[in-house]
Image (cartoon, rainbow, N blue to C red):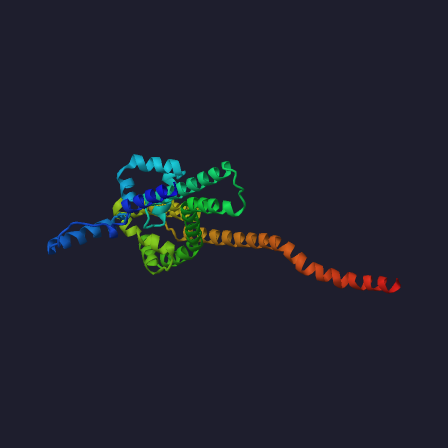
Length: 302
């Protein structure tokens, strides 16, 4: 029966081949046709819309009810996963993540059925027999785990960069530059994820109508408390027409103090974790140096 499963897998693989391996019956495009293709691809990239190279993923994107069903079966939180992909500006789509989880689930189910058949047939199962099942479970969990790790790392990076970035903005505002121009100027020259995200506000400003609304949506999308606090302060100051330099200075100082407290707590926890190793690596030699002469004296007396 294994060859039937192999044939079915090969058939599904060929049906869902990437677009680069698909056979297309198109003639040689004219000059106007190529210009139109370039314009269409430029518009799709400008609006963040990418076409998946996999036919199965494109089929899921075209059938939303089927995509919802696959997400439900594979345990994917559709809204949460879509937000992560949008935050990370990932080239992968929700359909591709769901397809990867579905393939992992099918492999895991096939391995589980094989182990169940072997167990009911009276075969003895050792630790090596369960190794394919462990690999299949990891393959099933890997897509969402990688997304969560990348999302947490990106949030931590932005949280660390907020005091540095807005410290530069504070200096420019105190020099007389408007807050919006100061953020744009700093974002163009700031080498980091926060700088790239705030540089995109020029494009998102056209989408949301105002720069303040785009900044608010950016802070809401990333769910970083420090960025949200500064965004609220900027919106409040711009709506009231008051100076924002002191507000930014207070927020930056508070965030720097908070980061110092977090670093101190991390070092304290690290010291506690390293204490058993210190006791083992240093306590045993010290115990030998202290107790060794005593045992030697006892041995000589005996």
